[in-house]
Image (cartoon, rainbow, N blue to C red; front, top):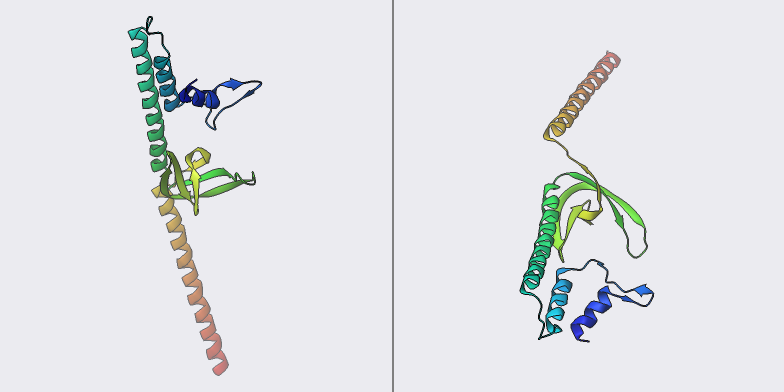
Length: 175
């Protein structure tokens, strides 16, 4: 058996009672290409694979690659659409197994090894871990700012009243 088939067997095929799989149990485009190359390597020269079958397999490989690229791009587009939005995520610590809830505004995006992460509340959170998305509209922000301004104005008036009452008390004691 060649190195390619050994590699495929060790990652994806059953051996005895237990299945050996890599961390991603789906066949990826590299495994698909390895299967195709192995098939070509061990085909019978007197009875080669039908050209229609070969073309169909190449088309499947191309489709698989395009679907993976589309999936990667849609994950990035989702991440970009979450900028400046409030998200909540359930993040698991692989070492301890504990789950932590992270809530905050998305203020950055990073991509590592094909995986997209959001920068939330000082932590990098995978897009896959997001459980809640809240859109803070401009109208909500303006409404909150108006409430704050009203509170500040009321506080200023209270301070003026306090100062005035302190001044009248002071003048009464002097007289």
